[in-house]
Length: 129
Image (cartoon, rainbow, N blue to C red):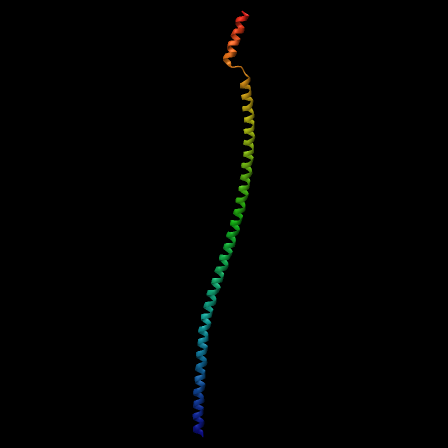
């Protein structure tokens, strides 16, 4: 019996040793998996940080672009106002010049030609003598 008990004890010891080795292998595999998962987590975290940074930069660029567009729109509106005021001023000057031209043409038609006026004044001087 003792021999069978010893052989059972030896086989139990072998089984326990095998289980202990299996457990140690599993621990080692888990350590490797944990290291890989930590590396993957760090990589994912870095990618997320870069994406957040890019998003913030895009939002800032969008705000700058929108601000620039608003400034440009305001400048264009001011330029339009100035051009319309200048157009109105030139329109009024054109009206004034047309009125002056019309008066000049009317006076030109009414006046006596210079040669005829000169002849008439000479004739009136001769009569007076």
